[in-house]
Image 1 (cartoon, rainbow, N blue to C red):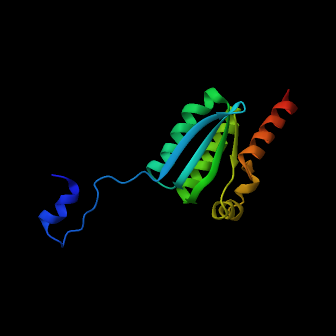
Image 2 (cartoon, rainbow, N blue to C red; image 1 turned 30 degrees about the horizontal axis):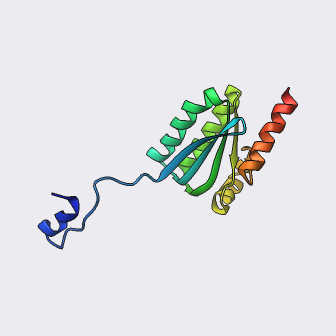
Image 3 (tube, rainbow, N blue to C red; image 1 turned 90 degrees about the vertical axis):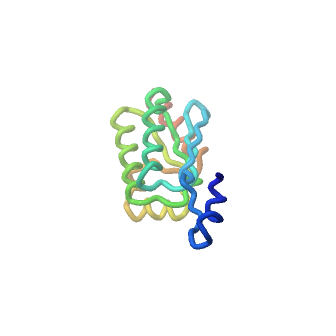
Length: 142
């Protein structure tokens, strides 16, 4: 029997609630200009969402060595998500990788400013700006 038919069998008093929840964070990797851009869409919150972000960065960054995390599609970040971003940034920096954050929406940007993380993170207004800063770092370090 299909799940949508359960409400009819059980009566109108029981609302239909899907057994699976839609993933709240979508992640998409693209190679661009000698780096990997991780486009994020949804919410970075406690649970599988923040774990998915950490897992993909931990899997890809060691071989790519340069990553831009595009936050343009992020609607909200909770305290656990913020902690994951800090952890990822610290790990990347300690390992000698280049990680930049780009395009945070106004609510996320305000959160970064409120927590003073905008001074810690390499955050840029666009992926292109982050890419230019990454290429400038490469020129300076050569």
